[in-house]
Length: 293
Image 1 (cartoon, rainbow, N blue to C red):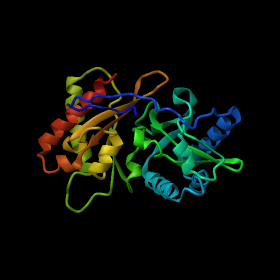
Image 2: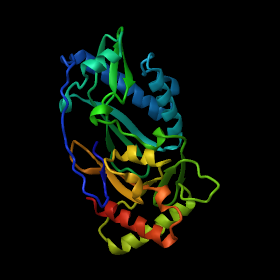
Image 3: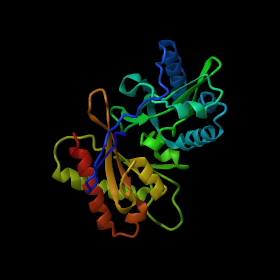
Image 4: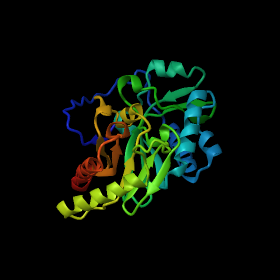
Protein backbone atom coordinates (compact mmCIF):
# COMPACT_ATOMS: atom_id res chain seq x y z
CA UNK A 1 0.00 0.00 0.00
CA UNK A 2 2.85 2.42 0.72
CA UNK A 3 5.37 1.61 -1.97
CA UNK A 4 6.78 4.71 -3.62
CA UNK A 5 8.15 3.83 -7.06
CA UNK A 6 10.22 6.25 -9.13
CA UNK A 7 8.71 6.10 -12.60
CA UNK A 8 8.01 8.69 -15.28
CA UNK A 9 4.21 8.48 -15.20
CA UNK A 10 1.39 10.41 -13.62
CA UNK A 11 -0.69 8.19 -11.37
CA UNK A 12 -3.89 9.29 -9.69
CA UNK A 13 -4.06 7.67 -6.29
CA UNK A 14 -7.44 7.48 -4.63
CA UNK A 15 -7.60 6.59 -0.97
CA UNK A 16 -10.80 5.15 0.37
CA UNK A 17 -11.95 3.25 3.41
CA UNK A 18 -14.53 0.52 2.75
CA UNK A 19 -17.43 0.11 5.09
CA UNK A 20 -16.95 -2.76 7.53
CA UNK A 21 -20.35 -4.38 7.13
CA UNK A 22 -19.56 -7.23 9.50
CA UNK A 23 -17.72 -5.19 12.12
CA UNK A 24 -19.26 -5.27 15.59
CA UNK A 25 -16.13 -4.41 17.54
CA UNK A 26 -13.33 -6.76 18.55
CA UNK A 27 -12.91 -7.38 22.31
CA UNK A 28 -9.52 -6.68 23.85
CA UNK A 29 -9.00 -10.33 24.74
CA UNK A 30 -9.48 -11.32 21.09
CA UNK A 31 -7.11 -8.60 19.93
CA UNK A 32 -4.48 -9.88 22.36
CA UNK A 33 -5.00 -13.48 21.24
CA UNK A 34 -4.72 -12.53 17.55
CA UNK A 35 -1.51 -10.59 18.17
CA UNK A 36 -0.02 -13.47 20.19
CA UNK A 37 -0.79 -15.91 17.38
CA UNK A 38 0.64 -13.51 14.79
CA UNK A 39 3.80 -13.06 16.86
CA UNK A 40 4.28 -16.85 16.88
CA UNK A 41 3.76 -16.88 13.11
CA UNK A 42 6.42 -14.19 12.57
CA UNK A 43 8.91 -15.76 14.98
CA UNK A 44 8.52 -19.13 13.27
CA UNK A 45 9.18 -17.48 9.90
CA UNK A 46 12.32 -15.79 11.21
CA UNK A 47 13.69 -18.89 12.98
CA UNK A 48 12.79 -21.20 10.06
CA UNK A 49 10.39 -23.36 12.07
CA UNK A 50 8.10 -24.64 9.31
CA UNK A 51 5.75 -26.64 11.51
CA UNK A 52 5.18 -23.73 13.91
CA UNK A 53 4.70 -21.36 10.96
CA UNK A 54 2.02 -23.51 9.34
CA UNK A 55 0.35 -24.26 12.69
CA UNK A 56 -1.00 -20.70 12.67
CA UNK A 57 -2.82 -21.21 9.34
CA UNK A 58 -6.54 -22.05 9.36
CA UNK A 59 -6.74 -25.87 9.04
CA UNK A 60 -9.62 -25.45 6.57
CA UNK A 61 -7.74 -22.96 4.32
CA UNK A 62 -5.98 -25.58 2.18
CA UNK A 63 -5.06 -23.34 -0.75
CA UNK A 64 -3.74 -20.57 1.50
CA UNK A 65 -1.76 -23.08 3.54
CA UNK A 66 -0.10 -24.33 0.34
CA UNK A 67 0.81 -20.77 -0.70
CA UNK A 68 2.26 -20.06 2.72
CA UNK A 69 4.28 -23.28 2.64
CA UNK A 70 5.81 -22.26 -0.69
CA UNK A 71 6.47 -18.73 0.59
CA UNK A 72 8.26 -20.17 3.63
CA UNK A 73 10.45 -22.42 1.49
CA UNK A 74 11.23 -19.70 -1.07
CA UNK A 75 12.38 -17.29 1.65
CA UNK A 76 15.16 -19.66 2.77
CA UNK A 77 17.78 -17.62 0.88
CA UNK A 78 16.90 -14.27 2.48
CA UNK A 79 19.24 -13.16 5.32
CA UNK A 80 16.59 -11.67 7.61
CA UNK A 81 17.86 -9.84 10.67
CA UNK A 82 14.38 -9.27 12.07
CA UNK A 83 10.78 -10.02 11.09
CA UNK A 84 7.62 -8.93 12.93
CA UNK A 85 3.89 -8.65 12.29
CA UNK A 86 1.84 -6.10 14.25
CA UNK A 87 -1.92 -5.56 14.04
CA UNK A 88 -3.00 -1.92 13.71
CA UNK A 89 -6.59 -1.68 14.92
CA UNK A 90 -6.58 2.13 14.83
CA UNK A 91 -6.21 2.67 11.08
CA UNK A 92 -9.33 1.01 9.68
CA UNK A 93 -10.72 -1.11 12.50
CA UNK A 94 -12.26 -4.39 11.38
CA UNK A 95 -12.76 -4.46 7.59
CA UNK A 96 -14.56 -7.81 7.42
CA UNK A 97 -17.77 -7.63 5.40
CA UNK A 98 -20.75 -9.96 5.61
CA UNK A 99 -19.55 -11.95 2.60
CA UNK A 100 -16.07 -12.33 4.15
CA UNK A 101 -17.63 -13.76 7.31
CA UNK A 102 -19.88 -16.06 5.29
CA UNK A 103 -16.85 -17.38 3.38
CA UNK A 104 -15.47 -19.02 6.55
CA UNK A 105 -18.67 -20.88 7.38
CA UNK A 106 -18.18 -22.63 10.71
CA UNK A 107 -15.71 -20.08 12.12
CA UNK A 108 -17.07 -18.46 15.28
CA UNK A 109 -15.49 -15.10 14.42
CA UNK A 110 -13.85 -13.46 11.38
CA UNK A 111 -11.96 -10.14 11.40
CA UNK A 112 -9.73 -8.31 8.92
CA UNK A 113 -7.68 -5.46 10.41
CA UNK A 114 -4.61 -3.83 8.92
CA UNK A 115 -1.40 -5.64 9.81
CA UNK A 116 2.03 -4.02 9.53
CA UNK A 117 4.85 -6.27 8.33
CA UNK A 118 8.20 -5.04 9.66
CA UNK A 119 11.44 -6.66 8.57
CA UNK A 120 15.13 -6.00 8.04
CA UNK A 121 17.53 -7.70 5.65
CA UNK A 122 20.86 -8.12 7.40
CA UNK A 123 23.52 -5.71 6.23
CA UNK A 124 21.15 -3.66 4.07
CA UNK A 125 18.25 -2.33 6.13
CA UNK A 126 19.34 0.04 8.89
CA UNK A 127 15.72 0.36 10.05
CA UNK A 128 12.60 -1.70 9.42
CA UNK A 129 11.03 -1.91 6.02
CA UNK A 130 7.29 -1.56 6.66
CA UNK A 131 4.58 -3.05 4.45
CA UNK A 132 0.80 -3.47 4.67
CA UNK A 133 -0.95 -6.82 4.96
CA UNK A 134 -4.65 -7.61 5.22
CA UNK A 135 -4.80 -11.00 6.90
CA UNK A 136 -8.18 -12.55 7.60
CA UNK A 137 -8.17 -13.89 11.15
CA UNK A 138 -10.63 -16.68 11.96
CA UNK A 139 -11.49 -18.24 15.30
CA UNK A 140 -12.30 -21.92 15.51
CA UNK A 141 -13.25 -23.10 18.97
CA UNK A 142 -10.85 -21.20 21.24
CA UNK A 143 -8.01 -20.69 18.75
CA UNK A 144 -7.29 -17.94 16.22
CA UNK A 145 -5.73 -18.67 12.82
CA UNK A 146 -4.83 -16.83 9.62
CA UNK A 147 -7.38 -17.75 6.96
CA UNK A 148 -6.16 -15.82 3.91
CA UNK A 149 -4.57 -12.57 2.77
CA UNK A 150 -6.55 -11.85 -0.41
CA UNK A 151 -10.12 -11.30 0.81
CA UNK A 152 -9.93 -7.52 0.25
CA UNK A 153 -8.28 -7.70 -3.18
CA UNK A 154 -11.63 -6.89 -4.80
CA UNK A 155 -11.53 -3.39 -3.29
CA UNK A 156 -7.85 -2.78 -3.98
CA UNK A 157 -6.56 -3.38 -0.46
CA UNK A 158 -3.71 -5.73 -1.25
CA UNK A 159 -1.37 -7.61 1.02
CA UNK A 160 2.27 -6.98 0.15
CA UNK A 161 3.99 -9.41 -2.21
CA UNK A 162 7.74 -10.07 -2.16
CA UNK A 163 10.03 -11.96 -4.56
CA UNK A 164 9.71 -15.01 -2.29
CA UNK A 165 5.97 -15.11 -2.97
CA UNK A 166 6.55 -16.10 -6.60
CA UNK A 167 9.02 -18.97 -6.56
CA UNK A 168 12.46 -20.19 -5.48
CA UNK A 169 15.14 -17.52 -5.12
CA UNK A 170 18.87 -17.27 -5.38
CA UNK A 171 20.93 -14.49 -3.84
CA UNK A 172 24.22 -13.00 -4.96
CA UNK A 173 26.12 -10.42 -2.93
CA UNK A 174 28.86 -7.88 -3.61
CA UNK A 175 30.38 -5.13 -1.48
CA UNK A 176 27.33 -2.88 -1.74
CA UNK A 177 24.52 -4.95 -3.25
CA UNK A 178 22.37 -7.97 -2.62
CA UNK A 179 20.66 -9.35 -5.74
CA UNK A 180 17.55 -11.53 -5.38
CA UNK A 181 15.81 -13.35 -8.19
CA UNK A 182 14.77 -16.70 -9.63
CA UNK A 183 17.53 -19.16 -10.58
CA UNK A 184 19.40 -17.95 -13.66
CA UNK A 185 18.71 -19.77 -16.91
CA UNK A 186 21.19 -20.98 -19.52
CA UNK A 187 20.47 -18.17 -21.98
CA UNK A 188 22.85 -15.66 -20.39
CA UNK A 189 20.07 -13.10 -19.82
CA UNK A 190 19.69 -10.54 -17.06
CA UNK A 191 19.33 -12.25 -13.67
CA UNK A 192 20.46 -11.91 -10.06
CA UNK A 193 24.06 -12.89 -10.79
CA UNK A 194 27.56 -11.49 -10.52
CA UNK A 195 27.31 -9.72 -13.89
CA UNK A 196 24.41 -7.61 -12.61
CA UNK A 197 26.32 -6.85 -9.41
CA UNK A 198 29.42 -5.77 -11.36
CA UNK A 199 27.39 -3.25 -13.35
CA UNK A 200 25.66 -2.08 -10.16
CA UNK A 201 29.02 -1.44 -8.49
CA UNK A 202 30.08 0.65 -11.49
CA UNK A 203 26.78 2.53 -11.33
CA UNK A 204 27.31 3.21 -7.62
CA UNK A 205 30.72 4.75 -8.30
CA UNK A 206 29.14 6.99 -10.94
CA UNK A 207 26.33 8.01 -8.59
CA UNK A 208 28.68 8.81 -5.72
CA UNK A 209 30.84 10.93 -8.00
CA UNK A 210 27.80 13.13 -8.61
CA UNK A 211 25.92 12.95 -5.30
CA UNK A 212 28.34 13.55 -2.42
CA UNK A 213 25.89 13.76 0.49
CA UNK A 214 26.47 10.71 2.74
CA UNK A 215 24.01 7.81 2.39
CA UNK A 216 24.16 4.10 3.14
CA UNK A 217 25.27 3.05 -0.34
CA UNK A 218 23.94 -0.47 0.23
CA UNK A 219 20.94 -1.54 -1.82
CA UNK A 220 18.91 -4.68 -2.50
CA UNK A 221 18.37 -5.42 -6.21
CA UNK A 222 15.31 -7.47 -7.14
CA UNK A 223 14.81 -9.31 -10.44
CA UNK A 224 11.14 -10.42 -10.61
CA UNK A 225 10.35 -13.81 -12.07
CA UNK A 226 7.78 -12.40 -14.53
CA UNK A 227 5.92 -9.27 -15.61
CA UNK A 228 2.94 -10.45 -13.57
CA UNK A 229 5.11 -10.72 -10.47
CA UNK A 230 6.49 -7.22 -11.11
CA UNK A 231 3.00 -5.80 -11.52
CA UNK A 232 1.75 -7.37 -8.30
CA UNK A 233 4.83 -6.47 -6.24
CA UNK A 234 4.41 -2.80 -7.16
CA UNK A 235 0.62 -2.91 -6.86
CA UNK A 236 0.79 -0.89 -10.06
CA UNK A 237 -2.29 0.58 -11.72
CA UNK A 238 -0.33 1.09 -14.95
CA UNK A 239 1.50 -1.37 -17.21
CA UNK A 240 4.69 -1.76 -15.17
CA UNK A 241 6.04 -4.29 -17.67
CA UNK A 242 6.99 -1.48 -20.08
CA UNK A 243 9.54 0.07 -17.72
CA UNK A 244 13.15 -1.02 -17.36
CA UNK A 245 13.66 -0.44 -13.63
CA UNK A 246 12.11 1.05 -10.52
CA UNK A 247 13.48 2.50 -7.31
CA UNK A 248 10.96 2.11 -4.52
CA UNK A 249 10.73 2.53 -0.78
CA UNK A 250 8.28 1.88 2.01
CA UNK A 251 7.19 4.47 4.57
CA UNK A 252 7.21 3.85 8.30
CA UNK A 253 3.78 5.01 9.59
CA UNK A 254 5.23 5.87 13.00
CA UNK A 255 7.71 8.52 11.86
CA UNK A 256 6.86 8.88 8.12
CA UNK A 257 10.42 8.25 7.01
CA UNK A 258 11.38 6.33 3.88
CA UNK A 259 12.64 2.81 4.57
CA UNK A 260 13.26 -0.47 2.77
CA UNK A 261 14.91 0.99 -0.34
CA UNK A 262 14.94 -1.45 -3.25
CA UNK A 263 15.67 -1.36 -6.97
CA UNK A 264 13.62 -3.66 -9.19
CA UNK A 265 15.20 -4.60 -12.51
CA UNK A 266 12.73 -5.63 -15.20
CA UNK A 267 14.73 -8.34 -16.95
CA UNK A 268 12.22 -8.82 -19.77
CA UNK A 269 12.65 -5.21 -20.94
CA UNK A 270 16.30 -4.60 -20.10
CA UNK A 271 17.33 -7.86 -21.80
CA UNK A 272 19.72 -7.38 -24.71
CA UNK A 273 20.56 -3.73 -24.03
CA UNK A 274 24.23 -2.69 -24.18
CA UNK A 275 26.04 -2.71 -20.87
CA UNK A 276 26.37 1.09 -21.00
CA UNK A 277 22.58 1.37 -21.14
CA UNK A 278 22.21 -0.88 -18.11
CA UNK A 279 24.89 1.16 -16.33
CA UNK A 280 22.99 4.38 -17.04
CA UNK A 281 19.67 2.87 -15.90
CA UNK A 282 21.10 1.62 -12.61
CA UNK A 283 22.89 4.94 -12.00
CA UNK A 284 19.60 6.74 -12.48
CA UNK A 285 17.75 4.47 -10.03
CA UNK A 286 20.56 4.64 -7.47
CA UNK A 287 20.33 8.43 -7.56
CA UNK A 288 16.66 8.14 -6.60
CA UNK A 289 17.62 6.01 -3.61
CA UNK A 290 20.57 8.20 -2.58
CA UNK A 291 18.53 11.41 -2.67
CA UNK A 292 15.29 10.01 -1.23
CA UNK A 293 15.75 11.38 2.28
